[in-house]
Image 1 (cartoon, one colour):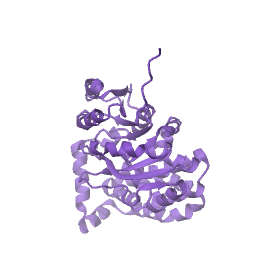
Image 2 (cartoon, helix red, strand yellow):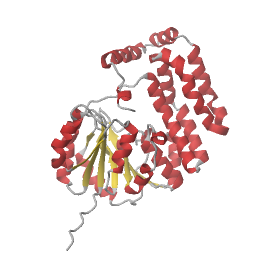
Image 3 (cartoon, rainbow, N blue to C red):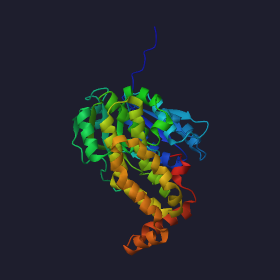
Image 4 (spheres, rainbow, N blue to C red):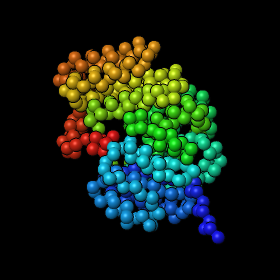
Length: 358
């Protein structure tokens, strides 16, 4: 008589990690509580991106206790490839990404697992997160409940993709895993979760559910990424690149995707990142800003004239001397931004985001 096949887990918790053993130790405390309450319904998948800080030893210590599924990368493959790798490891009906510096809120897992039993198996669920102050931060503008693809796309045109930026917001169906397997690093960098969700929205009329309960507490482990001015601006521009690649891949949703690209280029956080690049790294901005943004303008086709204000601002900042620009910020009482940036840069010696391959 053959052995009975174990039941499929309801939820796979997918954790990409690199050199954060101390933070992982904190996360394991809440993972232990979740596994104790839901030993068969929840599985834990971890992809270790060639860490050098004792992460491998820590994972070995907890592997049996937490029933961990672990992948050790032989070399650092970059953050996006590591996210894709840990996603491929999941065997549950649903998956959720959790950062190695985040913490779970175990008290809501019973509600989350119960909710997942009520929605369509191929739906995409968005859940809330808490910030460092304990406030909900991503889904406040969305009503709770189900959205058909067209309705949710209208919401994105109004509100942008900020609500999709944090990995812990997404509870994705197992049916989405082939799309991740098919995703190249270039197509997904640095937002693979947005790349796949957008592709399914326009290609498969993905249904979306919003559950306004916080499941993950963001950066409770205390780790805060330090970005260079230029790389933060490139991070924002990366959303435009991801949307462009979605259109290249599926050749559907032309107006929706191009309007979203325009929105991401011109939205206030992207403009603030552009201006901060000039403030924090003036020489680097003058040398690299134009060659960073110019190729992206060509992606907009008939919408190209609407990018002219962005081009004008980019050129204007290029010709303003950094001393005058920084002096203006000091005059309006915001000189502390530059001082804090330079202090962090001096203390850390390296941009954490670059070191992590983001």
